[in-house]
Image: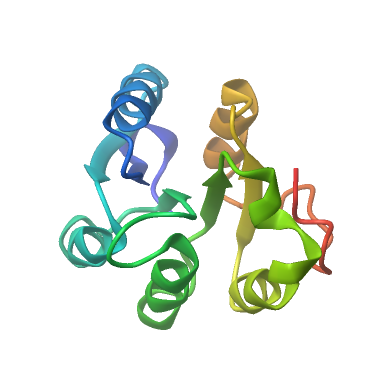
Length: 142
């Protein structure tokens, strides 16, 4: 993990307004930031940019956030991930297996939008997605 001023964050969301806001906020907090609009692009940027942390939407076209998270974990298991969603039904019991699968591979936190941005910045600065997280489902939902 790089020191704070050198920390690189990859933001992945298909909502351009969300991406623009998160990029601005994370750059303002002192992070180097890249963005991607879907999971396919995120995998390419993960290989080129080598982020220290990913902040990624769950529901995206072409490749969703959970599958992207799993692919990133296979390549770089040390990279913490925040999976975010604006759909509370995305974190219900019907999806428990999907999220348990994503969470068991590495440091993953699932957060509902709107995000508590101060908390996101603290989590990224700490360099661990699971700083307050008990790894059993459904506790990752914060």
